Image 1 (spheres, helix red, strand yellow):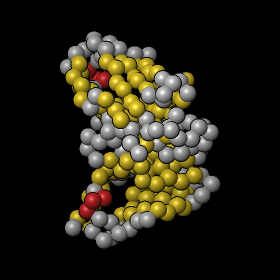
Image 2 (cartoon, chains in turn green, blue):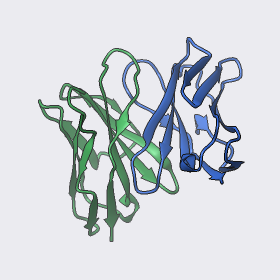
Image 3 (cartoon, one colour):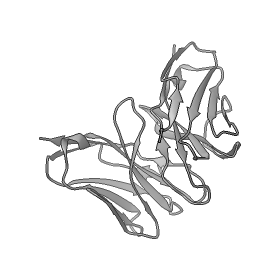
Length: 114
Length: 112
């Protein structure tokens, strides 16, 4: 069974640009969450999608947005990039919808903003 | 406001001995707790979880203990192996959904 796949693995962007990251969850998983990891803030929750609807949202500015497609694949978008957006962006998928369960992570996308 | 705390930035253990990683939380609404292992430039790998209705869960060499009154959980690895060397994250969530709150992580070094 294939794991969570994130593309691209590495990305370099310039301040002010926008970026789109992609995540394909484990087959059959309908919940997709996004996290940002930085040295200063650690792992922080961005948002969670289930059945194409945002179910939870973390404390990030509106420049960070996401969506989920009918096949459960998800994308996150960051507009007007800032230097501080440089981070490892992680996607996680899980199977259950009505109770907590473990989330399985992809390898992440390393975004560098210059 | 750090709701999940891992107060030990690092831990060094001899191969074959027990590794004990600790985690404290402040939010009494957390009802599900997980441990992840992470290597640099990779995503976290799920290790073991525990629901708040339990106080212990075992999976092979890994055991997680939950003390709700103390708002404390710990991960025991027995016996420790050099391949266990990694960063270990404690995470917690509340109710419905998968919004995980992570601790800062503990670097475990297992010496052979």
